[in-house]
Length: 120
Length: 429
Image 1 (tube, chains in turn green, red):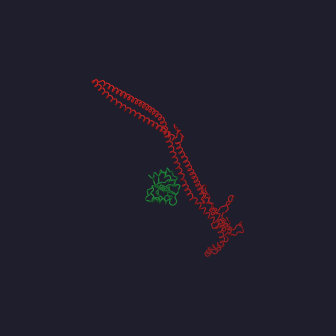
Image 2 (cartoon, one colour; image 1 turned 60 degrees about the vertical axis):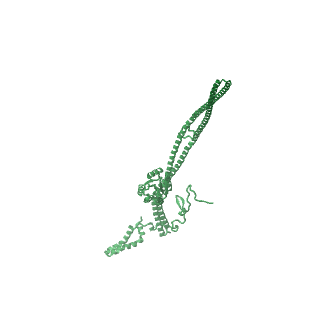
Image 3 (cartoon, each protein chain N blue to C red; image 1 turned 120 degrees about the horizontal axis):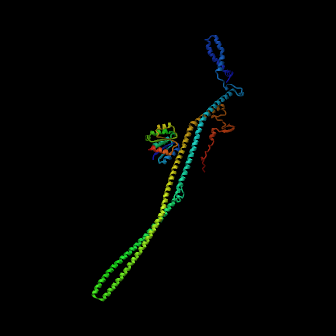
């Protein structure tokens, strides 16, 4: 069982991801924007972070950079879950320090499979 | 295109100024050229001015001069103002046309995206609905499978010898069989107890025979002593002693006879007990054999049926598991479909930002321009915001008259409720 942080401005998305991961036995916390995510990341130690790109305020790429700036999250896997499918954006995500890129809509089984691969 | 005469008429008032300007270089040249050149120059100056007006000056605008069709009651200033307004309207209409053409393409693209979003929304809602219906249907199927184990429901494809019996009936049949077996065992136990009692009685009789044999041994001893006494008496030759001895022998004979009868009686009793015990044992063995055969006859098919039923249960549990897996797939599909809300929202955001905002800005700019023009044309009927002071105004389109509300009136109008939306008015008493 892993401790996972989900960052997405869409409540539906957060609920869907949370439902999928909780059903698989993981402990899930949610944040609706980058600032709250950083605050939660500082007060908890997560094994994995799943973040959207297009969010009000701090966007997903900025969040990844901010997380990588924290010593305790330097090597924590950060997956990007977004509707963006462009090569440029993926490259930016990789440069920012993202571990993986999942395009919405996600399939729960695929998400769990990627999650297990990343966590192991 | 205006004629040279029209141009000269239009710019006639500017000719003297032009002549003065042209005279300045002539004055400078007159001092250094011969007198006859200065004279020729002076003569051609008006012609040069006229040629400049005709060749260089632009054609006069409509506002530059009154036309024959202009109403005589209007002043030149009014005519000029109206022509300016007309020119402004022409420019504005030109810009409207350009903007309409440009924004038309954007709006067409926007419409396509909106259509796509609507289609995706419909597809997502359909997927979710189908997913939920599938989950409901499959859950019901699971329940039917489970209930079929408890009821006499035949499952498609299942043909066993005891398919008409439900699981509780099998359990009841097993229980009845076990009860019957228990009753038989109880009966055997009672019969065994009776056999033990009979054996105890035989042992008692045997003990009695032992006592009788002891008595007979004692009797034999007494007979020996009597025989010894008799031989002694024979040597003495006394008659009365013989009589006494004969009585003793007679008594001993009687006692031996009684003992023999008792032994026979005991042996008879033992024989009877043994016979009864044998009969009881035989009956019990017979009954045990019958019971065993009957139990075997009951257990074998019931065991076979139970095995079949177990296979059926395993089969149904397997099906329930498969349906459970399908339900999981449906739920996954629902999760995928529900994510389209976020995708649609982001598509609309993307649509709103570049296309609609651009169109909105252009339309706002045109609106400002129109308002400014409107203000210039008739400042008395227009307020500072450019709206008519009468509020709403009428527009005639395709012969039909439509009343258009002002923004303030539109803001004041109640918003239409969406279908299914609850009213936010609360009344407490």
